[in-house]
Length: 212
Image (cartoon, rainbow, N blue to C red; front, side, top):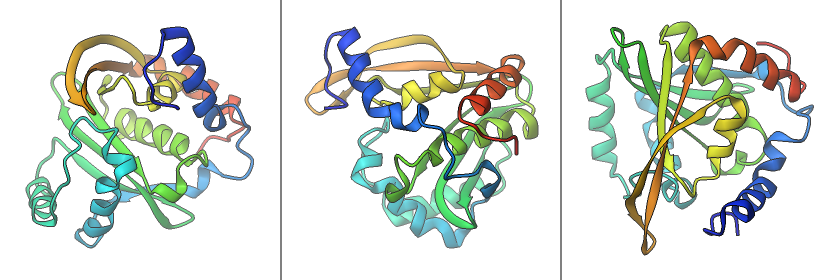
């Protein structure tokens, strides 16, 4: 039901019903202070590959093909000395629960992009919200970018989470990617550093989270 393309208002209502548990309940059972990011290690690769290749994650990505372990290891090896990217493991209570992939960091332009995914059993618990806030903090406060940009399928309900934490739509690539028998739009989103402090405070207050 969540990903069926229907008229705009109805689609919004359907998607909002699906994502509302992530945003509308007060997150009292989880804690922002328990969410940490650490560098990805070679020992993490099999775990991360299993997350990425899972059907639930893969069908929402711009490229949904299954990646081999050799490809994955080469990707990691090529990134080790690449200062334009940073790959992180998200820990909750010191247990790995997801990955944050920051890439295309451009110091002159002050921009970067990112992606993230979470272990299937932790989807829908609100931890993804904590991961997104932590990832944005990392990009603005550690990498000192002024703008974060991203692209995602129009059917990806996480678009509404991105908007809730402060991202805005910049444009649409119409009928850009073939998926499940149809050509699907790709949505362009962005968030600027000068907007983040107030937007961060609002979402933290809304979710009853204390600042980490």
